[in-house]
Structures are given as C-alpha cells and as structure tokens.
Length: 445
Image 1 (cartoon, rainbow, N blue to C red):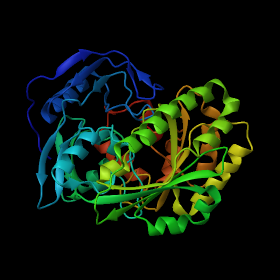
Image 2 (cartoon, rainbow, N blue to C red):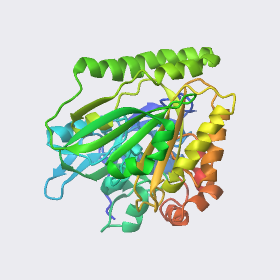
Image 3 (cartoon, one colour):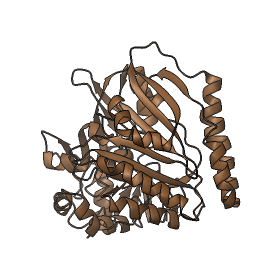
Image 4 (tube, rainbow, N blue to C red):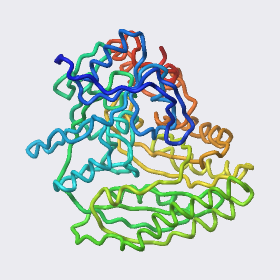
C-alpha cells in the first residue's frame, strides 16, 4: 500500500440538497467537494474524518436507492475524469473514476478498442456503475465490474491503495462491487479488446414462445435479452452477435424514429397519459407493444448495446438463478393479470455468467436478471412489493442500486461470501467513515 501527499486544495461548495436522477432520493450534505486528483481526494477524506463527518461519493445519480446519500461530505468526481493510459500489450485501459461511460466508449472506439460487454445506458460514471454491479446481458461475458483488472482506492485513513489479483487480492476480490463501503474508488483499469462489430437482430415474439425457447435463445446467442409488455402476450427480443461485417448501421432517420421518437417521445406521452388515466394503460400497452417492428443492423459495440433513456422512472431488479427464471416470469405475468395493477413499463430480462466477485449479483451462479419499472411519479409500492415477493421466493438477489427492501440478515443468506465482505469492511473502515443509512440496512453496522 502506498501513501501520497496531498496536492493543491480541492474546489469546495457549501452543501445544498442533492437529488438522484429519478428524484426519489434527496439528501443535504454539510459540504460538497470536487477533488481534481486522488491525492486531493485523500486529503478531503482525512479532513472529513477529522471533522467527524461521514463521506460518500456520487456519480450521475442513476441509482434508485440512497446508496450515495449523505448528511456529511459529498464527493463529486467531475474533475476526476479522463484516460490515464492505454496498455496495448496488456490490453487494458486505466481511467479516472468520474469518467462517464459514454466518454470512455467514444475514446476507446477512436483508439480501435472496446469493452467486451456493457449495460444498456452509458450516462453513469465508471466507478458508480461498477460499484453497484451494473451489467448488460451476456452468455459468456459478464458485468462491467468483472472486466476490471485493477483499481485505485482511497481508504478511511486517507491512504491510496492499488488493488489487483496480484496486489491486495483480498481487497480486489470485494472492491470491484464495493457499494462505496470499503473506500472511494479513484481509478479503474479495464480489460479491453480490439474494436469489433455486433449484429443486432430485434424481433417481436410471443411471451410463451420466448419462455419455451429461452434456454435455446440463451445458448445460441452471445447476448440475448427481451422485454415483456404487461397486460399483453407480446415481447420484443434482441440478439447481439459478433459479425465479420461490413458495418450496416441503422439509417439516421429510421434510428431516430424508433429510438427517439417512439421509444422516448411517444413513450413519454403514453406514460403521462397512463399516470393520469390508469385504466387506459392496458390499451396503451397493446398499441405500444406492436409499435416496434423487426430490424437488423451491424455497428460497433456501444452503438448496439446502449440506447438513449430519456423517460424517467423507478426500477427494481432481481438476479435469479438461471434455472428459476422462467418459473418466476410466469408467476410475475400471472400476478399482474390477476391483480388490479396497471403497469405501463415493459419488464426487461437479461442474463450473465457466474463471476467471482463477493457481492456481485452473479457471484457464483449463472444468472437471469428481471427488471421492473414504473413511470416517475406513479405509486410503486404495490407492484414492487408483489414482484419482490416472487423474486425472493426463487432465491433472487436485489440490484444494489435499484429499489428493494432487503436487509443484512436476508442478504447474508443470499450471498455465500457476505461475511468475507463485511470482515474486510471492518478492517478497512472500522469507524464507518463511509457509512450511511442504506449501507447500515444492507450490510449491518
């Protein structure tokens, strides 16, 4: 572990209210700081400890839980951005923690490089996304955190630690999905590969057929996902596979019409109507589920994996053992159909292979993710409670950055390596400098 001296003072502002992207979490930090280097951040951590204040870091606020909320010092990493270096021999890129994924993806593409897999939005910072377990869908390739090869962490005593499989491996094993509980991540080193092409095939399919063919669809495609539209039997499937080319991107007008006009503009209007007149939602869903037609296109990875998401919502997502997924999905559909609930957002289903990260939602098992959403401002408790009951009955693990009600007692049973993580937390942050109400609930105190 190395120790560095602090550099020039960080910029500081008086703390005001902070809100997350969805608007469901608000906090009032005592102060906000925007350090421009790991050394400045370490100095701020030592200063906060001296003042008796807790410390949390916030990215773009795309978590739906209060994982980043604090009444102490809020670290904003907007000055901790940029690429530190590309190692073409090791095929890695080292990036500052506050760098948005969209910026990383563009820079990598210009260098003829790419991440292997990614989620379906790229607004988040790299550290925020990985620390909460953000993932895409993949038969063989896993979450963003599973692509980390090293990380830099400021610990509670204000030191800067570099972790990898070779250096502090016990910290590396946990800190890739660290929930902000072990320290403040200041830089990440990702594995990369030469830029490649993906062919996306999007196709409507009936719910029963998707579930009947789910294992086959998963096995035959590198990346398979689907969306089910509640109150209908309709799904939209997406299969992404590597292609030798040539590139055949979506025509600009057609891409704008489906991805912006229909999926954002018209969908926003439909959600607003549904919130105002809930009985209209099933009819809206039947129209919406037929609006998107089959299409095929080939492009570089981030232009295939990611899509613009401008309609604001609340989300709950559970990670299920793969063998339980189809049963749980049938129960979810039956629950919606047998209840008075009116659900305007589609249900998203993705997959991931097992990984070796202590608190990754795919830790130690092949996983299917089931994500449910409701339009911002829509009462969500009834729907989310009913969904959570189904998911936990099938061994589901909640996404750390999405709405759930689980606590440490439950999660200790759901994660075989939970005690390993909390023991490391006791060692690295015995005084709970990085604690907040959310971490007290999910990790204990």
